[in-house]
Every structure is written in C-alpha cells, then in structure tokens.
Image (tube, rainbow, N blue to C red; front, side, top):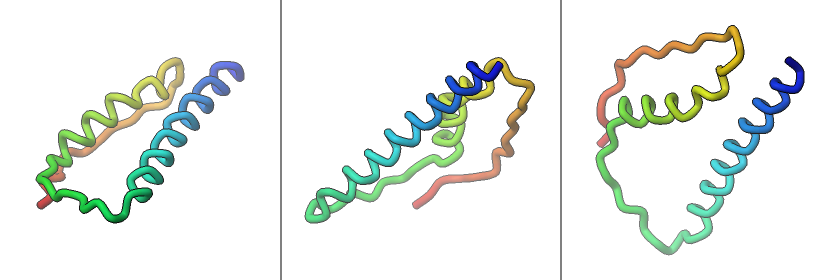
Length: 73
C-alpha cells in the first residue's frame, strides 16, 4: 500500500510540475496580449476531474462534485 501511495504522490507532483511550468511559460511572454474567450467552466471542471480520477484508483477515497457553475465572460 505504501508503494502505491508513493506512486500516487509522484503522479500528483508531476501534474503540479506541469501546471507550474505552464503558468511560468504563460508569464514569460508579457508583450503578447492574451486573447479573451468564453469558457464553459462546468465542462472544464468535468474534463479536469476526469483526468485526475487515476489519483483515486486503489483507494477507499471518494470524490463528488456539484455542477452549478456556468460560463465565464
């Protein structure tokens, strides 16, 4: 069980590393304007939650979400 926990921690830290690198990359080019666009937050959250379900595999943990978020912009 401890080995599986370490694998989960490694995967989560890798996901966080990629997120951090992406945010730093976005900030690296401040002279380029960022284009505003509509975002369906409910869909984005469903997509991200689906990508993170591997973190719950093999555990007794449960996750739930309440879908009450609309669009932004």
